[in-house]
Figure 1: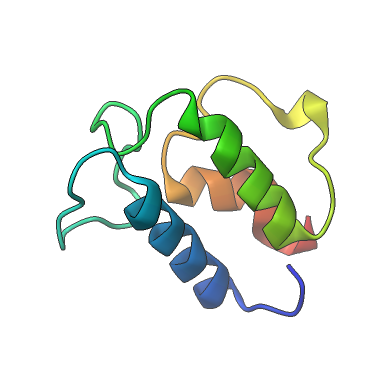
Figure 2: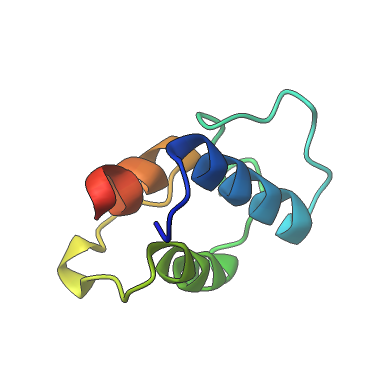
Length: 86
C-alpha cells in the first residue's frame, strides 16, 4: 500500500468516490455504503476505481480476484485488494 496505513487508504478510497460520484455523497457515507445501487458510481466508473486500487497497491490486480461483488463498497474493496499487504 505504498507505506500508507489502513486508515489512510480507506480515506483515500472515500475521497476518490466523493470526487468521482455521479450524485452528491452525503456526510453519512462510510465504508459500508453501497457504491453502485446508490448511484455514487456507475458500472463504467468501476474500471477507473480498479485502476486507482492498482495505484494504491503499487501493482496490478490479479484478474482471478475480480468477481461479482468485490466493488460493492469500500470495505469489500479494501478487504479484497488491499488488506494484509495484498
